[in-house]
Image (cartoon, rainbow, N blue to C red; front, side):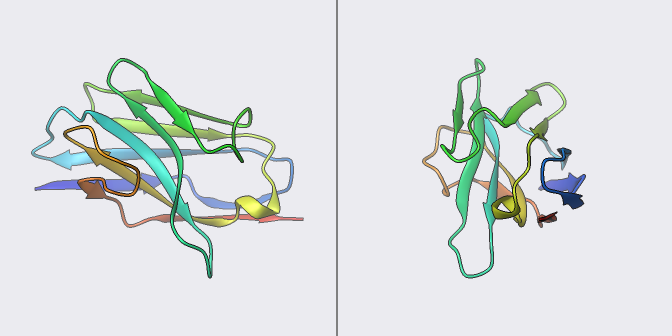
Length: 120
């Protein structure tokens, strides 16, 4: 069984930075893709950033240029460096991973989420 655990959420002022990390444990397969999603109160869960094998990345337009995803494929870890944070980035951030190519929001494995709150 695969388990994903997120670290690094918290409270930060607008303009600040946070770094999220996600570690996989259990019988870890070689993930085709790992990434981050978020869900704010009253909103649907949305893709933030995803990285596939080979380093192919996909970012939400709202975070492009501010957030950077990286991963260690061998370790089954993924990171999200978030800079120039805005209050609208406030949400629960979820780590996700899939063994095979998937569409957004259709990942195989999900973490429990970590809260990110950006104060104005």
